[in-house]
Image (cartoon, rainbow, N blue to C red; front, side):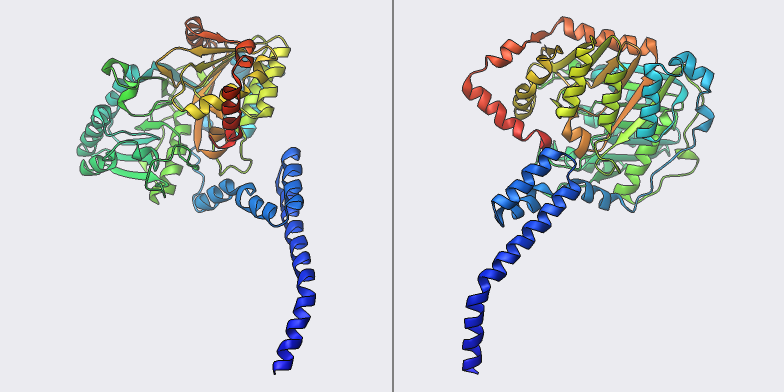
Length: 491
């Protein structure tokens, strides 16, 4: 027996370097094959394959921990048991003559954009909508509270942040009164957003009899600003007939008349008409995932009655999409359709190279491209990273404007004063790939023109950011901003 063990050991001493070498080669080949098959960006693929082979074992381990996109796979797995909600809206789909009248002839740029967005969103344009911009919490909160107090059948409310502060408690009281009247009330708050105040508003809501759920409750005990798979949507639908959406959270900081310590300016929208069904679809789907309850019956049936003359469409997007990041196709399509002007307002501007190139191409074609960002960002790391990439758009003729305080949280895109998109999505990878978002596109020259003038008013009181200013940053500041930019896909 001893001789057999000695022989086996001698055999292993000779063989183990070969086993180790072939194991390393096999691991590297497997990791490389995965990167080649899965990664869509050629430069990213080359970088990962190079790291895998130049740093044996270590490179493969780094790739499996950091290079494999677990966001989409986790999102798809989490939502795999939830059917997509689709509400009937065919009665509100406009005829071809109406589309030509409102949008343009068959091959006009905005008609091509409408075709693109239809394929991306998987939803039809619907006619007969009335959409009203609301200036922050000062206009939106009273309108929302009035709608809650007038509810007779159902209220579906989804938000990222719902603070336990004076504003939040006003909403909790109104929702509680609705429950007392026999209204079916459902409130969905993001698992991270629900922790921005303590104690969380969920306890107060539950105490008032409101059915409340959290979307993917945080797995970490403390607030984490850059957690993935967050429900960043802001949607409220009352009686299936009136909806509210945009960028507004529920917190006292957004009600400027209350003189909050950290004021935030925002834009929200009150919507009536058939497109409210698109808001309701998303809420019903998200609620089914978070609460394992399917909302149905007359109380949750959308009203398709015409309320105005705006043609609009809801656009849902998130990390569970079959083609993750597809909202970039909408942005690229809108920039391509622009003939005269593009105006963008967003608090977080961290587009990837493809979106920057689309902005640059628009500017190079002679389109006036204006990008409005907050002078003082509420997330310092995001502000630094954004500054590090501004040269990419400034160098090609885009104009960047820094809006003065209070912090501007509005998210708007207006093309030629004829088409507009608003909602919860920002111009960063977090919104485009990592969060669940909801936007609305509108084909209405009156409304788009009004939003265009709103952005122009902000530009009039803003400071121009120049390429010379960006280039003049000191070396320590440039290094700080450049390091921050490395994390741009995750900010």
